[in-house]
Length: 258
Image 1 (spheres, rainbow, N blue to C red):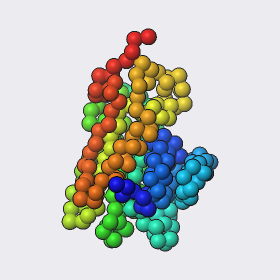
Image 2 (image 1 turned 90 degrees about the vertical axis):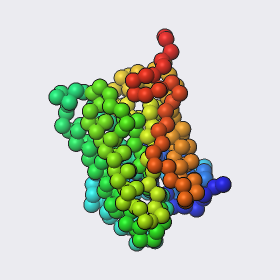
Image 3 (image 1 turned 120 degrees about the vertical axis):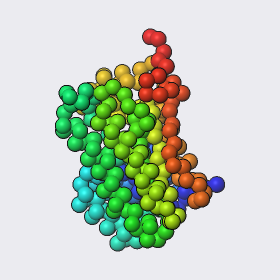
């Protein structure tokens, strides 16, 4: 049964990777879309593709989730237009750098904390009250297996994703007494721009992360998110970990011998 058709779904970080894949997946299911991202040109390209392929005209906005004022303005514009999202996918997130904590770059730390934690909070604070007021809605936070297991030199990224996990649990408790659902989807290794961003544009180093195995694709994760969103309203997935078969945890990864 398609319970996604006709729903208004807001996706952050929608210009690439998992966010773009979610936009494509939900458009295919007949959803209405609001897409936010920092990169306007990329976002417009996604919007054109959705209209050409699925006939869906998405509402686009250039929004950096770290900018609380910009988030508030964009959310207020939606509410004023009578477009309170039925589903919020808090997808915007990143890793920046990979180093021991005593050698880390504070600018990388700020970038991760401001995006992964404060950005998620900014968007949720702007949207969730309207869901509560009308007693309908679903928040899906995109976490990571890194929010369940720490790994060497992951320190601050791990902390941010452990924080997403805690916020998801806290939001669920705060929504007790309402029909609002709060879910987390936590992927393992997904081949997107993630590693390229982490390594500050070093494509060769990023490519090496996925050598010798078949990682998840953004579409795999989008399919899982669609499953979570499509469930009956009395069913709430609190936390779902999705991994490529070649990865058993953050340490155990089966790689083919060259």
